[in-house]
Length: 258
Image (cartoon, rainbow, N blue to C red; front, side, top):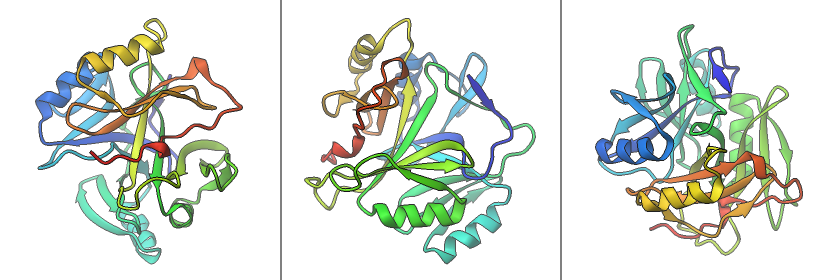
């Protein structure tokens, strides 16, 4: 388990879902992961794991927030590389990258808490995009990421981004047969409960109204199943106990936008 209190530049330090129906969203994720809610903050064992933001339309994916010591400085740097600040609310803001994909910024104070790495919390996140090279350049410049290719760069293009020596996020190029009008999105992957197991977790998600996007796959991080929740927002279940270093499966193979 990791409780993030002093995140380094560019590391995920918050997670948020935009939803037009907070009650439905709370009910689904509460039953799936055991989350409780304090207003629009989801907690697990009393620790914050995610937030909800009411919007007119459901988001295609969850929004990770990346740590910065100063939102204004990061926003100015992002603007130099084609990004722009869309919204700001105190110590948090939404930044649009050059392709229009939203990512959060968080200027974390000493009281900031964000729990990851336990069952039912964020385990990993990937940006799935057509414009892979542009994303690498933008995020590398703004957040000073180191980058390492884990695919072959052509048939499967999977770039992992590093804050210092720690891997923090990945960028995946959409599969070649994906329609060009499919928008980029972030896929948040949540760790399954090892006592419940992967298959039972997948079954539970489906019984609660989630729709499996395609056949679960193996990856270097673990077994993965990608869903659309009852309102259509994408997320994934990850079983880190079932990893396969020889596999680099990806959510880029989801060609549908319905």
